[in-house]
Length: 485
Image (tube, rainbow, N blue to C red):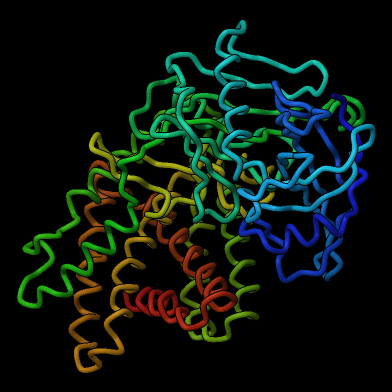
């Protein structure tokens, strides 16, 4: 089928988006200004008797009416049925008349195991094509496969419920498909980076099996623009979430009052060191396979200016930052004095929640970069110390979260818990950093790391103020410690 504008009433998608976890515009005034049908899954199509499986992909344009304004495009895969499917009532989107066919009941296709089977079979079929690429000539939907893994076509799908910005579907214990909900024209770094790391044999990621994209031929003045829609990768079913492991370790320490961190049974330091080694190896591969360069003093000054500007903006949102503003500016000024800095492809949004511990070691996931940044910015080279700083802040957060969980039941134990939190954070941060750096951190790198940590803390104060005000004391306490370091 060819792409076309939809005849669906926009309000249908407005009501649908408002109740999803992954729509980023909740709380903002918006209208649906366009719905475009870009294609249907191979092997599907409308059936007069209503028994056929018809799965389509719509791109829904949302335009905001508040101060920031702007628009976004969201991907909405739909399973269309002539008759109601009660098994999918929880995923009902709406019902409308499809031109030339009749009335259909529409459901979010990711909740429909029959519909998801079409994605899996399409990826499998692509492996048989030249170069592992299979493009539907009518719609332009293109399935791409990497060699080396045969998909299990006899398994069924399970939609994950916890994600917010995207949607992930597991196919048994074999593979995992991430469907990108907010679509930005151009290459998605999650696919791009996983492709390189998979082809080079990195042991620290979930291997990429394939991806789905579509070319908007009319975009970019007729030159066409690629929209990357989904990626299929290895499913690390038995993996443990890095954040959960860290929190468990910190909680164990808090309950063993007579032991130091290195004596506690749940000591996490060895895992922190292994994670530091894993990140170093990933950065090395990325530096070898993506543009990497040494930039001069102008780049260092521009970085310091950007950090200072973010601080100035944060001070308007978080007045409690004011006593520490001079210390933070001094930290950024040291970056301004550097002769230059090294930049390369990085993760861009690294923390413990972006790591998984498997029986074979640590895996790093979700290379999309910081979701709030424009795609063009997420594709730019950056200092690897940004990733290191993100992990160090995560090591500080884990014991502070545990500390808070004890606060109401044991007020008198607060000083001891604060000491334990510091002990856990310092021990694990130091082991991680030493393993990553392979020894001592140079003076220049220390200046950069301190600045990236400070920049991350400033961001955290704004985030917590806007989303979890009761937690803002965690980053504010970190800023206070910087002033006494």
